[in-house]
Amino acid sequence: MKAEPGKMLVIDDDPAFGKIIKALAEARGIRCDWVPSLESLGRVGRVGEYDLAILDYFLEKFTGGEIAEYVDVFFSDIPVVIVSSRPDIHAQQRKWPKCVRLFVDKATGARSILDLALGLFSGSRDGRSS
Image (tube, rainbow, N blue to C red; front, side, top):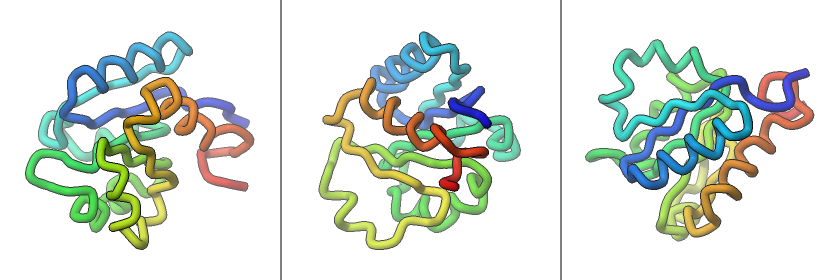
């Protein structure tokens, strides 16, 4: 049973947030890639290399609502955490796709966001609840 992901992906256009999450994850022995945009990720097929993803609600010209419409296709096999500096976003999104396990306000702090995201892995076989 996998207690923590081996490799995680952070997609967020805030370099400070991305670098902090990456550093915190790597300090815990988790390989982490941070990219500032969907475009900089490169091939969408790369998503399969990851066990967990943290996505900013606002990416480029897309919003989380728009991303949510197709995120389940690309991230269907891994848990996704949506983050935003606007806490009202959660209330606006009534039904997240199945892969989105959690919405976290960035005011919670990078360490807490990482802990919450990693908590999705604890006690589960593949990041999904048992």
